[in-house]
Length: 76
Length: 376
Image (cartoon, rainbow over all chains, first blue to last red; front, side, top):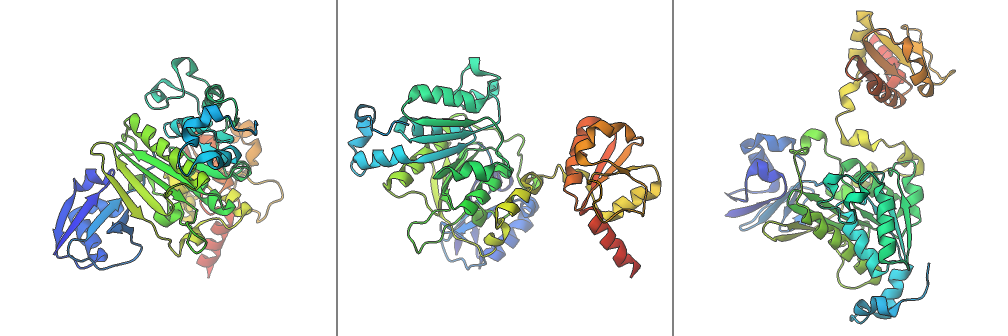
């Protein structure tokens, strides 16, 4: 099972470019795993979208799920 | 405002399928407000003016500076130091004298936002900070106005239409459904050094103008309840479907009064928290014996203070009574901690770092409550 992570904005400074991860059951486990690997992420504000749909609660991930991490932008 | 369509001026768009004379008439009758005449606002204003939106409002309290010119394409070197709103209005009325342009050279605040926004059909957010963005979002929800959102960071931009529905049964998602709470300073990475490529707000601001025109004329598929991100480096477009959150409604002020009481700058920054203190720290400062406490409430406000020594200087008299401050540590207090924050800001402006200035969070009411609890 493979999960593709697409990273936006200044989260790239933290997580690097896009990631590919294996065997993650749901979005909560993904957050936990990312926070462990990138401790600064726990303090960052961002929204998570699975297969282009913003998630507001824990949902399960399947093979080839694409997860986007999008921080807020304020510039204008 | 001229109520007849100039066929020659708008000919190229009027011959478009789905646009026609009806589309042009809708633009002519539309009233669009652009908040922020900067990187996003300039191109949005330019295209909406050119397209013939009948009434355009501009709000911006800023002045043109040299560092603006790489992206704020309405201005020139001769405009440096001039009001952006006024200069933009001047340039735009030369581009299209047939429309009405109203400029406010002032900052949009909780005190004037509802009044200004109310007169328009569609609001475009071209601001550059979170406190304005949350304030505009909340005002649009309160007034039920569609919000054309655009924002940028370095090489990436976001565009969306909030507070609008595709159909009667649709939900109207707003910015707080995406990000319920404003980020604190430490939650936005490298904010100060972010930077922006000049052409990017040009693209995003133009997209905002495009979404506005689609929304007004009913053409195509406007970005209602969808967020589009654009990356200028690799030309990647990514579209997200947005959904509402049950808690959003509780975060937005429920009426005009509640909106006017909101402190969006406090919500969005940590700068004020630095000088806000809690009752424990205040008690420690009191115990040192060498502080000036200033009650900035009006005469006669209750509860009265008998527990410690203080100066009584109402907020609007603070500047003229500044000589009463003798020590190097000052704590301002009021009923709930709001006016004292304003007082602390004024004192910081006056004294800079020469004195330690604090405001008591929660005010005298909360301080008394805490002490009453401790006595139990």
